[in-house]
Length: 167
Image (cartoon, rainbow, N blue to C red; front, side):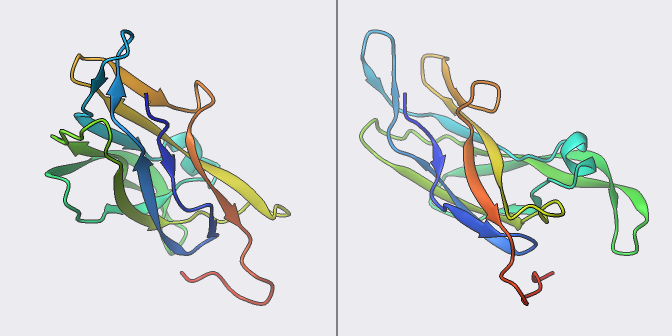
């Protein structure tokens, strides 16, 4: 199975960033047969727990590409607005790239954008993790997740001294 990843290595806290998911090849079954990839799900680190900890990738939107069909799934969470008032809001929890028919030897790259969280006080960098699930034609999946220690990640770095993050 391919090892899905994010191309960008670092992004700056508080800024809007474009991230590129990369799936370097299609599926391979236990017998070694090479198969197409049918779909990819990119799960955002946007659970209520991550939002409460201030570590969510918000304002997420997929970037239109040659992918035949893209969908987003949203969840309702409690989040502070610009005035600090906590209210219910819907945010993107995952992006689905569907009906791919990606041949085994092809590489898929697709972009999405969002607002990078601010780093906790005193930290200069921290990983932001995205679970990725690859769907294969025989009904199997390959998963790169926090649970199996293989999540796609990008390092969030502190804004340069004297520069405020772009809000």
